[in-house]
Length: 374
Ligand code: 5AD
Image (tube, rainbow, N blue to C red):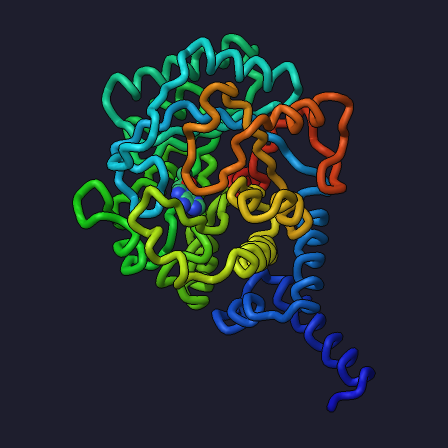
């Protein structure tokens, strides 16, 4: 048995080791694996440490993006996703331009300073034009003050360029998993779902000068810890500016539902997601990391926990109430009257998860800025 002094000594050594690596933000695969395997007490230290690193590098506050779920129509058939094309149980909707503009105005007036427009994946010329037009309208209506993130899936480089020129600043396109084999097991085997196309889209987004975000799901059927280690290295190598990652949540209307007993428990997925967020923060101290909604499907304060583990972006849902229930990517997605959240944030609330909210600031990626100044 180790004596308490020895435990303390070992702990200090580990801290020291961590500090040295942190200076270069470099870890070996084994070291990352070690972080993901930490026990309860050490995990607590890791999460705190990551929050401190965030505070040192990009400041101790969180940025808001008002989340607008534009449409749940989707051409794709991802085996995990509740709004996949072949799920006939979904009531499909599309917000009107007016509804989108109203939501954007709300975000503007409430000093969120940024919005994120998300939708199922469509790529018809009509859809591309509509988004371009909406971007122009939004900027007109808010005097070019609103920072816009798009999350509209795989598109051509030309489309990305057009949307960037129309004033969108950031684009989030999750790789879902950086392991090609695992990716294939999560998607139907056809041209619509191709790992290399996804990679190429991420390259194109960088080339047309978006702040590029990607992310993965955690706790997928067939996913090993080693995959997650590789995901972190993938994000570091890609030099991403932002990340949105969350736990996989099984959905009854999807083919992956049948594996629900073969995946880690929800409690484990939560812990693993928090460790992933903290580890990514240590690897990439100045990127934007979102506290994603899927965490909330596991535990009501899931996003707060993520913010305490190094995340710095919160995306309150500002989709018109009428359509909230239809954007069900996974089971238990918090859908019901989230008006409390909006009201709380508006009505003089200055903090969330103990962190001050950076009202009025777009919160663009410091990592992106630093890369462009090099
Ligand atoms: N569980 C968790 N996240 C999911 N997503 C889709 N389906 C699920 C699910 N069942 C995430 C994917 C996708 C984003 C729009 O939502 O990562 O990129």
